[in-house]
Amino acid sequence: MIRPNDRITTPQAAVILANILLGVGILTLPRFLADKMETPDGWITVIVGGILAFGFGLIMVKLSQRFPGKTFFEYSQIIAGKWIGKLLNLILIVYFALFAGFEIRDMSEIINYLFLEKTPKEFIILVFMCVAVYLTAGGISSIARLFEFILPLTLVIIIASYSLSLNLFELENLRPVLGMGIGPIFKGLPETWRAFAGIETMLFVTAYMSRPEKASKALLAGISISVFVYLITMIVVLGGIPYQQVATLTWPAISIVRSYELTGFFLERYESLLIVVRLIQVFTGFVMYLYIVSLGLSHTFKQSYYRYIYAVLPVIFIIAMYPKSINQVKALGDVVGSIFFGVIGLIAPILLLITVLRKISYAQN
Image (cartoon, rainbow, N blue to C red; front, side, top):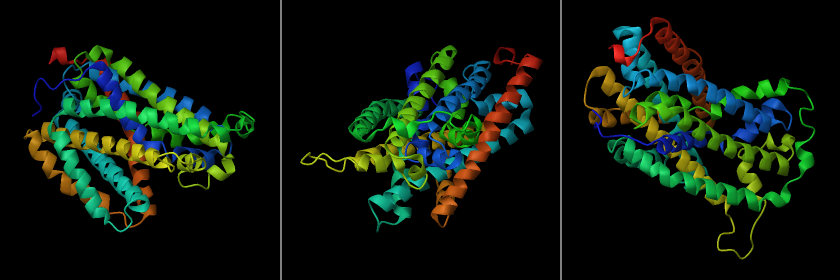
């Protein structure tokens, strides 16, 4: 089991959440929104999606705060009973295993396409898995310390990259605002929601906070950071490239950065930094999901946490390698997104409602 002193601070909880959220849609969100909405109003959808994400995240935080020091895998059985609780645990374990497999396969696809064309994806995945095992074995406090180093570096690189591309920005590309009404905003919300997949980690992170009563502040800070990054990404991309073209680009954020070069500078193709940042963020998500899957199996079956770190790796590897094409990888991502909607829209709210109506809390057990 996890060491009793494996605790994180409120800023560390916020950093963990921000890192996980930023790994999802930095490069692709502008394309998805431009394609679905067919307007330049994607930046508005990001703000609305962030507000909704905070609302549902708050439900998860309030649920976890009723059981201090316990993760979802423990209090689910207190709320719903032993067998239903274990069933819910297995649903989330499968979900996070699928998410972990999707994340590391997505990362290997980018590395294989842009950097190591002749390197087998299997090798890339195995290398990152080995690093992830080392981090996960140290517990959540070790993971948090690494994330604290990664996030500031990520923000500096993103802001610097976008700043150098502002010479292409044209305000007219963002107009008219709400030219087709609010209908497109709702059309784009499902895609925006996928960019906030990761808020459900608050069902577990809250238990390891040294001050769980401040989990709401950590949630707000983590979501605010991700909304800020997604917002400037949308504004810079849609302001520099008409939304009709954005919808046809594989990675619009990279395209906008590539369009500007500093001749004679020590790094002329500085979009490589943006790609590396995205890969690191995806890796942080994989590490956290591996941690949660191992933790879930440990709590559900009352076995050593460290044993499951290694036991789940072959399963995640099979999940990662199951898609045979990039389209099947995207299909796997759609499956993960659908389960995510169920987790945030059904499981957590229903369990919180039950605890309120039955007045269940850890203090009573």
